Length: 314
Image (cartoon, rainbow, N blue to C red; front, side, top):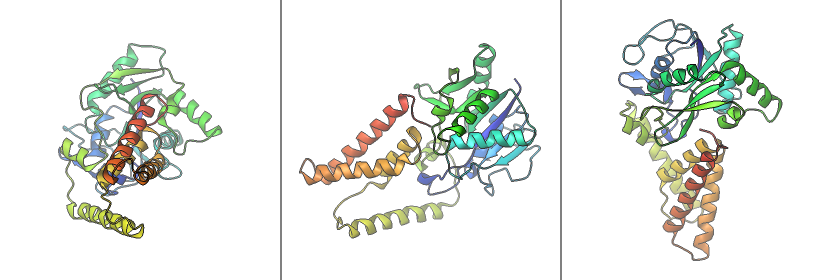
């Protein structure tokens, strides 16, 4: 099928200490190169995100190269940036479509990929097969073996995407908007993809599980030490020196909220969870540790349910 591709390679990577995901390496190539390999066959590709040194794709157009398992990169690679920066994946998709149009790259289908899924190529062929066997639909979206929908591994009608971007732009806009909301009116097929196809990298634990390398361990350690020092400083300022805070758990819950709702939900969720934990502790319902753990677990549960209801975003 004739298609262009939009690869989302922006984001703050907060739970990775700000380390850019496109530059992380897996099986000898960067995650961006693996995403480009998954988009092989595209007439043109636009990478939406900052130009990250060492990520395998500069600001210039790239015509060929190695990308995972020896595959060739797509023939024409463009660069774009969502406006404002860090406005979220829906805004990034819109920026990618605009860049393709500006450069005269027209195609009936658009493959949308997040750059942090090194095994995405396992599912792309199934998306095209589903579309070819189901005329009249407006897209196909990957679904993991456990039933989780992943709109950032999907193939969609370019005309339908452009239509929905235009509608959203005339309304509330796309900044920090849900990708599911952008796609809500499309007739999209759910396509089950092989195990691990949608596994992404949000934390260092995710990276380790996938076998992803990162060479600047000292920088990562520095980030972790800074967070711990900042946590101690805040606790002292609020006269809470005796309270133990599981930083990784707090960040994990924030990440779930950011993916399941919208990105600004992360700080809001952790604030409300912390406030609720403090209230519970204040009236003697539970100890500091128990009340915080219960609040974080409840926040995580609600965020996941929100996502499963179809109103959140990946």
